[in-house]
Image 1 (cartoon, rainbow, N blue to C red):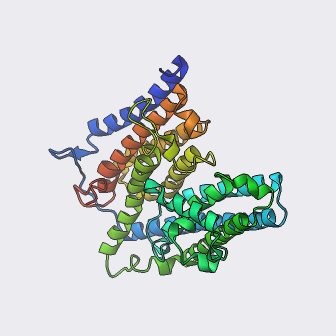
Image 2: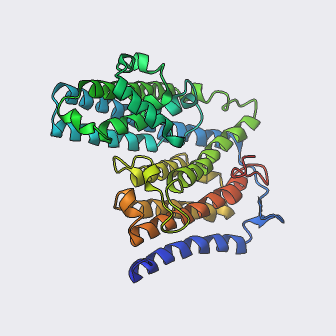
Image 3: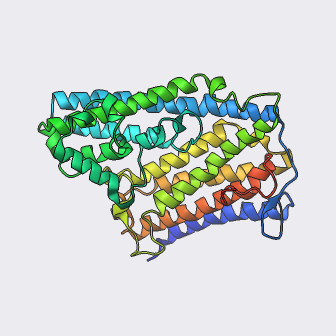
Length: 377
């Protein structure tokens, strides 16, 4: 079934505008392409300007993003502690709401795949996903049955499987089968939830502390005696945009959205139990949009190629708008023709934005001609 007429027109105009800007850039001669369609633009941004962009990303986006995640984690631990002391429906609902705030705060920064997050398995300890064959879920379920005392202290929890430590495990504890017992007592289950919340808060604190000293984190890239380091640094930032969008599309969206109606698999979607599947996708996109805007990386574009940046801002805005207008939980969304069309459009616009960054923005801002993030080169 198709979208209602008004929504068809709105969706079509949005997509047409995206594609028109892309075509206009080609026709204006801003972007040349080789025989394989790769963009070739002879331009190298100034290394000092690149360093300024990276510092802006660190101080305006990455550091504050981890600080928000840390604050959310601490609040989650406090509210979960209250649930354990005074069980009840209201206390459980408060803990569930705090989980959502923490998860979405993580979504805003989870595509930062460089720096302290890559040490000590922090990335996987915060969120183990995708959980292929439900291995992590089975570990959580087994732990709840066996009541392992070693999982009740954040300090000993860190030595266990990463699948037992983070947001994925906590979602099942708070929203999964048997979670209602938390409103009636459920001492072990609640103590385990509190340990996970404490673990998340501790990781958030480590990340916030590290990025409060951005010069130290970025020291290898900020050396003025090695200009090539600036380009490497830019690769990390632009790579975060491309790979973040690819992961959001391929793992988060296409992980449950089939190639056609009737082939969807909503039961494997991240955070389906808490109803946060689409909200997490929106948070991922918003975080990447903030990284792009807050770092001021658009200023690296030559004046005659600024339309590339305008197109990227437009497409980011479209993606966020589409995601926010998917109002139903994932299992209901894929069964609703209108909602599913929005998810399909989300896929299309993400494809367009990934292609633009990879073949236009990247070479225009100093990456080697023919470099392709999408190919993993």
